[in-house]
Length: 151
Image 1: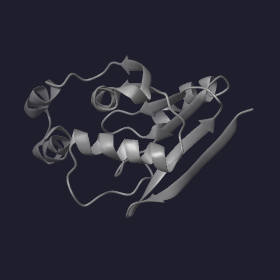
Image 2 (image 1 turned 90 degrees about the vertical axis):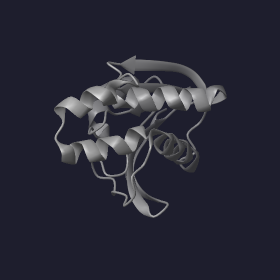
Image 3 (image 1 turned 60 degrees about the vertical axis):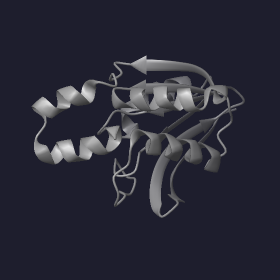
């Protein structure tokens, strides 16, 4: 039996939206790209949630989740995800699925919490050096927001 929860919770001092399906299987955690919301994963999540537990979420400042006032690094995003998974009582082990920038978050999460992970899927994941290319093509106002993730 699959149980679905889609709601916004208060997490620290902000609201975070998540979509969770729960079964007694490894939990597949979907991590969207830099400016993408959890909706990026909707079709995939809906299809595989019949077979396994899944969770997608909107990072702070994305989709329907509240923004934060301070810049955050990729390490901060990993810690926020780890704490969110604990707060939502998402069962380990996790299979992380990261798209684009979400691939950076997935790889760093796996290196910091290897015992929590039983698999990882990278979908067109951004390499760590990608920030250098962004410097050449993004307008300055977007670069400032982009830098917070990589510092």
